[in-house]
Length: 426
Image 1 (spheres, rainbow, N blue to C red):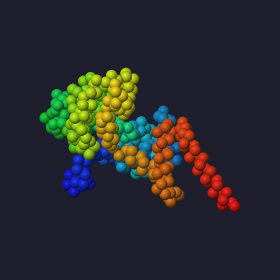
Image 2: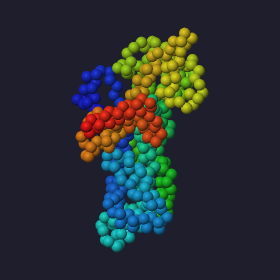
Image 3: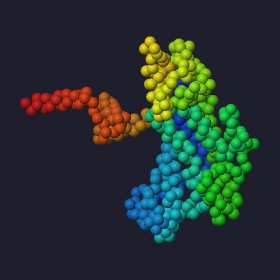
Image 4: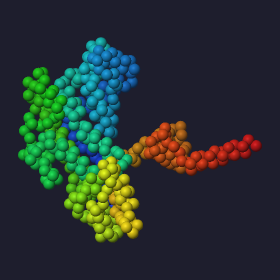
């Protein structure tokens, strides 16, 4: 993605006017990965050590269940934290917190009985009060990144949401430690997340309700040094996260800002032209998508507020459904009212904001073409993938109803196979 001698720079040279968008999911993953480096390394090591200790031993898992029963804790397994997907750590962190008491008792007992150095190390980390604070903070902060990630993993168009949701995430994290008077919408792009002059006092930094409760516990509240240290680390986590979001996401992008006006609420609102007076601004940012009559396109955009949309369409439809409806509207002469705008909007919505769909297809490919079936041809793999995606879009194999043409095609293929078998028998 670099500006010099990179894939992007060569694409721009070969195809001037091309629209370049970074994968939102990978970008937020990198933001979280860089932010977590401000916390002690042993937090992540503790998760992996506990998982590794139980992962290959049914006996240990059975012994641990006795401690879960004793502590009246649900008998859940310890989850694996992926090395390449840092955001998967949230589920692992949440599970460790859930099992904290039985884990502490188990590893203490294991260390005393078997004198294993691994058990002693894990027990000492579980006994360290700062680690429980770190885990509780991660359990509080990581859902902000995960919820953003889940939104842009969807198969539906999300480009019109990217600017708004990135801005919300950026402001949400800034609010935890930054002066509220500086967080106005007109100044958000010019904010320096690392400007100490605008920081809240350290005692006012919000770390999550449960973290604040832990810091008030009798055995921790007297330790002012520990509280100051973890608070500074958590504030640095937030600062790093905000710096990364600002660097990796285009908060000043004209195309993303213009796309943010494309919502069902805005497009069916009489104040649409106050939100975006002209669609020519967006068209100018994507010359390879639209190079037609700007005046006609803009006329159709400005004509939208004159349309009376059904209330059910406003309330429950997606943006695609809305513009499908718009594309079918006809005037008194039975001519299409909107000839250019729907096609233009669909082209904008087709711009991908993440690689999630492509990665899902690659995962499906690995399930189809295995070591046992490694000689499948490309056409067969394509057909199986297409069938799978089609059935999935129709509600799954249980409720899928094949059309008449599908049944006839299957019947013809079966007849051909039967005739070939008969010939071979003869």
